[in-house]
Length: 233
Image 1 (cartoon, rainbow, N blue to C red):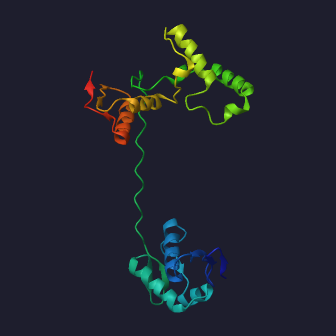
Image 2 (image 1 turned 120 degrees about the vertical axis):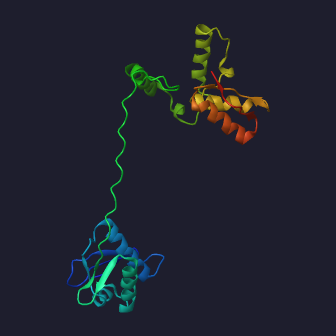
Image 3 (image 1 turned 180 degrees about the vertical axis):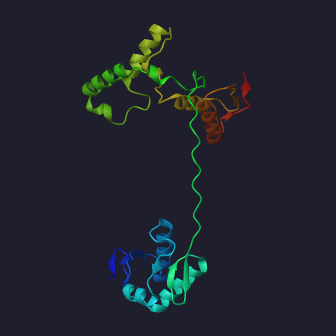
């Protein structure tokens, strides 16, 4: 018996265990029925040789004219989805089995020494110290620290960085002169945006992809940077 819900008919045919969903939304019942049968065959719910209900029984269950179902069956027979033989009814055709998907190539073992630029050693990350600092900061940080930050970076962070640069690197810096970046790509993008027109940026090979991609993107967007052929070291 048909059961309609949100534009879909779920129906079975008298005398056969046959359940299929016909989505009528945006198209006629004939086109919807064709697609429903195709989908049932593709998904394996209808297999080669499975019988389909007669056009009369299907039309009655679906509440449409028998001629509509006849046209659907004829179209699916013409496309090779179904077989119709006098005295044997309509059945799913013997369709070729699709070839299996190619197997994924085996993952190569990691190199003993990874010298690729931009690839760090994850095993050296100070997990315990980092977790302890994160816990302390989350417990002590004010509520406003979790809102939208200053685009130059938190003032406390820039103050700490300015002190570190003076002590460890001999750089005279103030919090107001520092810009905190989210990564190398972000920093390179800022630098390339402020370069004068016609500046030529040379890179060595190998180099990190962020340097050339950030410069190329900036050049395309602002026209301030011209990228020459990379200079090999």
